[in-house]
Image (cartoon, rainbow, N blue to C red; front, side, top):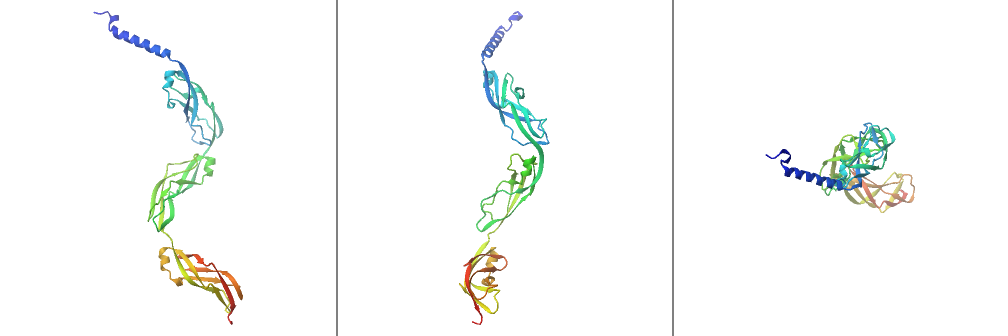
Length: 308
C-alpha cells in the first residue's frame, strides 16, 4: 500500500504548480490608477423638502488597483452615494469622500471630484392646475372644422419645490390627432408638466374630446338695394352706387335657407341735412347668419328736400 503522503501525488503536484503560477501572475500585475465618471446616487431623501437645484448626475473618481482588476471595471461597478437624511431648507454643502464610493473588492478610491456638492432645498408644495389639451394634429375632413375641446379630468395636482409650484399655471397633454375626422374624436393621452422640477402627484392620463362640426358656409348676395334709416320725412336720399354685394356666413343649413329679402343693406343718415356725404354701408341678416363682407363698404349719398 502506498504511504499516505504519496497518495495521488500527481494531483498534488499539479495543484502546487497551479498555485505557484497564479501567485506569479498576480504578483506580477502592475498597480495602476484610472479615472472614471460614475453615477451619483442620492439616498435618505427627506419627504418634506424638494431639490430646487439640479444635482450632478455623475462625479469623477480616481481608483487604484491591479491592472487586471481595473481593466475589468465598468462605470456600473462603482457608485458614489450621497446621504441627504439631514437636509433642510436652504443652500447646503455635502462632502464626497472616497469612503462614500462603493467599489468592488481589491479596488481603492484615491479621490472624488467634486469633493463638495452644493444643493439648494425648498419646502415641498402641492397645487391643483388646469389640464390644457395639447396641439391639434392634422385637419378634419373637407367641410368640417374643430369645435369645442374638453379634458377629463380638467384639473390635476402637481408637486415640487414651492417656488416652481407657484409659477405653474397648467399641465399639458400630448397632441390629439383629428386627421380626416367627420365626427367627435375621443383620445386618451398622457398628461405632464414642462418644468422638470415639477411632477404630477399621481401618474395621470386624460381623455380629450374634440368636437368636429360642419364648417361655416359663406354665401354672397349681389346687387342688394341700399336703404336709408333715420332720415327726416322732409328729406330723401339718393346713393351712388345704389346697390351693394353682401356676403354672409353661418351654418350650411342656415345659409342655404336664406332668401334675398332676408339680407338688408342700409346706411344710417341720422343728423345729416341736405348735401353730399360719403357714408358707411351696414347690413343685417336673418338669425343663424352673420355679415362678413360688404362691397363697396362706402357709398356716396346725396340728400335733398322731398319737395324737389
